[in-house]
Image (cartoon, rainbow, N blue to C red):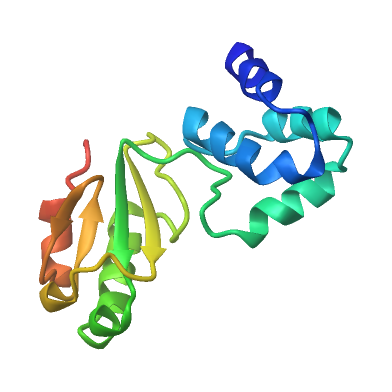
Length: 148
């Protein structure tokens, strides 16, 4: 909570501060914890439901923590045409999570993203900062090993 207090103290508590504060909170925690949204509501005088509405409007905000290995699958045009949907399906089945979720052990999280800028390498994904190109569904178990 100390970090949250420091974030809030660097702002005046105006409505126009909400998005930058949300960005700072997510930068600190990796997602938007429920208690932080509650404190932001008190700080700005804006209802929790309005803050939640603002946060859900923007794709950049998360409400669950990312896994140690955050998998982002490109769904841009080139990747979509080359089968990114099958890649996402294979990952969901292998990790037993849905897109947007994190595994119970916090090892992996899965996110579909609009484009990662590697169109000539389609279909592709990123695991944290590493680009994986020309992925095939049969590679998923090897790319994303799970503890037994």
